[in-house]
Image (tube, rainbow, N blue to C red; front, side, top):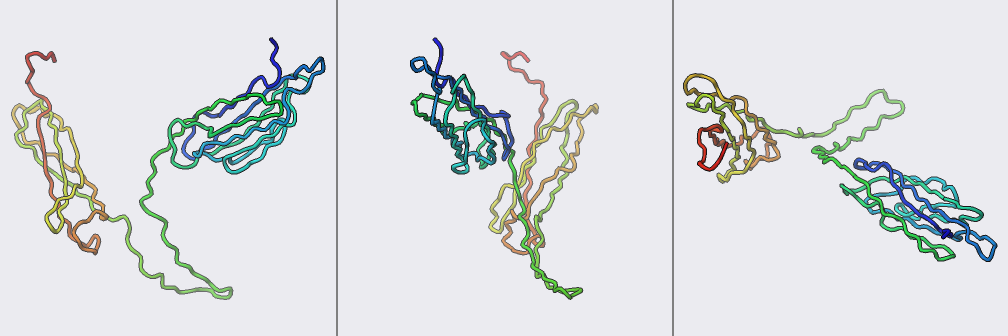
Length: 276
């Protein structure tokens, strides 16, 4: 049986994967074939209107001229494509492309469509697929905002100007705690697991968590047990976490407690029903 009227429709996106705020293309196609009206062919479809609205995670930033008909933006997420007649004398395919940009915080595999509607004078039932695109967004942290500017005006005939810019504060202050510790009487050929836990003490002797490090200490090869010194274990202590109660920033004293947990990793124990 020979197909007539609208014989196919499609929606594609490319590339299939973008980064946060990236761009991609959307391609709409619709194909129609003339219909036989008592020996007199007539267009496969007339007065076509296709309305494509993209997901709220995206916005349309550019619209190409379609191969047939006219297209216009209804708003930042919606395009309307109108075709007076398609498939007039032979099978005919019309194509429209537009450029879409990712916006907002959506990540992962996202459906591009919010909706795609089709209508024509002949009342054909036409549907479009709902393609997905993979969006990868890295986690971005901006710890320091832009500084407030000091406005300065120099007159047209002036050679120099003196201003008092006021007071500025030091930013992103903090301290680095570097710890050395000695693990006593470590047997030869046995690795040690070492945990270092740091807390900060406020004026009411309440402790606040400030960091933990888990280290593997290599085995030594001496004949007898030896003390093993572990050096330069570093902790970063931002001044924004200061709980001393004073407001003099890095000029204040801060109190900390450091705790250690250690044990052998390697041992000679084997359960009776376990094969190692």
